[in-house]
Picture 1 (tube, rainbow, N blue to C red):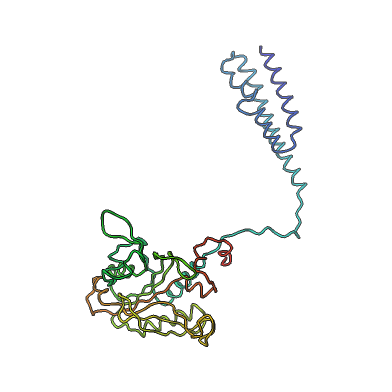
Picture 2 (picture 1 turned 30 degrees about the horizontal axis):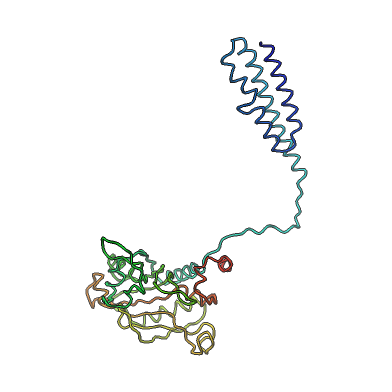
Length: 345
């Protein structure tokens, strides 16, 4: 019985060495390992069944089988090295061949504009504030001095969150609620900017979008006036467009500011001389601004007529469209890689 098992081991060895010598690639090496050293191989089965053998078989067959197993493992490793050396001798490196271009991601143009804005204002001593996109109606409208019958509260302009319990919630229509949250937690003097995403319930076209990004600045102290706003705005736009930019104010109305203004900047294309981009006016409308209404200060917990402050803001997409000469706002949300790859950095 012992002689038969030893003959079997010799057969296994002969077959295994024949297979390993003829293995010409990694696939054949893998087949060799499965066939001769795998869990279901004849050799491993013999080793596994030794526990049922006689003490003599365990000693003789066990020693021979383990020796064979080590020999086959060494042969396998040598064959691997042989194939590796063979592959390296066939490898040829052409240093004149063009390299393969690696496809990389790019920063979204709105993100680029946002980072530029933040860097400029931080250099001017402003801090960056943030707040929730799902906002209390009380902060989005009431605390900002919006009357109950104001058109902006209508379903045509605002996305309301359906809820049977708790206070009324909306997707914020502007970043101004962050003003209230910040003022409730901080006392003047301070200067902050608030970049963020906002939502409007309106039809989309080349100049309108239901989801967009806004920026606004708020500066509050004892003796802040319109001159401070105009200076800060002029400095910002000159730094952003890397050119001298002038500011023009026109009377307007916003519930949360008094007085209120629409503000324009000199056309960045014609430098104020008049062209198609500015409809030959020399000015481009950018956004709204004004002195913070005292009712807003009161809603934030400040005493009326104690502080003065200015607030102003605009859409980031609009600024990106001006900077990169983009003619359709819907491109920002399209996910079109052909559009986005233009802004790779």
